[in-house]
Length: 151
Image (cartoon, rainbow, N blue to C red; front, side):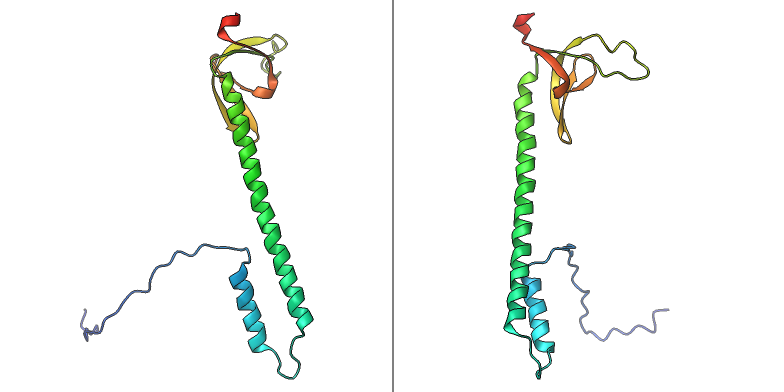
């Protein structure tokens, strides 16, 4: 069955597997490739004007600055969330009071409950306190914070 396959001793290599990262954002290399392609494919009797190149470079520069600002904003937001988590971590081990949110099953939501904070974690933009009574409450819903000595 393998009679049709010839081994002539020539070396055969599989193509290298390169993991390509899909990057939809434009960068300097892509801009240069586009610029070179435009220059090499332009009509020699009617070349592009300098104004067009300058306009393209200005647009690219603006895009690059906007991407940089976006990355900076993303970093700033992450730092703010981390800071909030660190700020509220001082609640661990303290007794807190809160008014449970009203839902259809629990009509006794008007009374204030007290429990000890076991941990604090971030849930999106909210910071959640996990309590000793098994409930999870947003730190923004807490009405009172007491240390263990204040009981």
